[in-house]
Image (cartoon, rainbow, N blue to C red; front, side, top):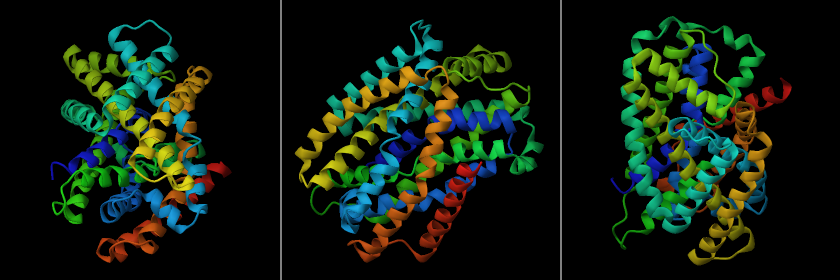
Length: 407
């Protein structure tokens, strides 16, 4: 169970970043607890597509990209079109958020773009040297800081929350809020392309065992469910934190990364004291660093897996070589985006998240086809109830994507 919780915690590390620290906090600041229901529904609807990555990775010992290839060349190509082009914009948003928090905490006076590139390059170098093992260990430590500090801070905020805002549904008639909901749901808890990497992490965790020592699928599913549950809990915590500190005082979130980070920490300092503000700062930096580490690994794996399946270069060595080329290339592309969008952090973030969400129904459909049509153990296939939930989720996400374009 300790071994299988690694991939589940990596999922949480990727999830608990901009979706939680920025988007959940903004949701609480702007609407109180009104959008908590949106957060919980999003978690429920996206769960099947993410778990299909665990199912296929455990049963087939391969990534979902192999399943896409089995469906036909059109499937990997469709995934690449839906997921890969927006990756540098997402990374730029993550790096900017991390740089904003670090700049405020440590008094860094360099431009945010340069600080972001420096942090991102250091993360890339760590991944290139240490690979999956270092990623897993670093993520476990940061997640421990994150969970403890976030829950402790939330408990202190509870007396300041306006609980009546949870019943407010006026936002449903506001087109501007619907656009924000699309952006909120886009990264909550993760973009759906992370399901592909979830299958890789699961397969890699199993591949490190000796023959005959493999864990049952039920254990892998339980471990993922635990990580998914922790991710949902922390999403609600960050929304409560935004509602209790910012919404109750009528304070609007800042648009810049440094301004937003400074605003959060200073507000908590004024409300709860400097020691509580330090707790928030540790939680915020842990949030962004875990996301940055795991997200870069995700991008490198996506590109390497796509190249491997389309060109046909088999074997771990070929995958590793492509991964080592993809990671620095993604850093360079991200640097270019950073210098173009740094001044408008929230605009860049909403754009990246919204575009990512528009591609979500495509990826959910591909995952559904893999676990229902591709070669794998019948016992590993999802139940009719889980399949039905995924089909319903595809319909809802398609409707929201259409609403995004209309609005």
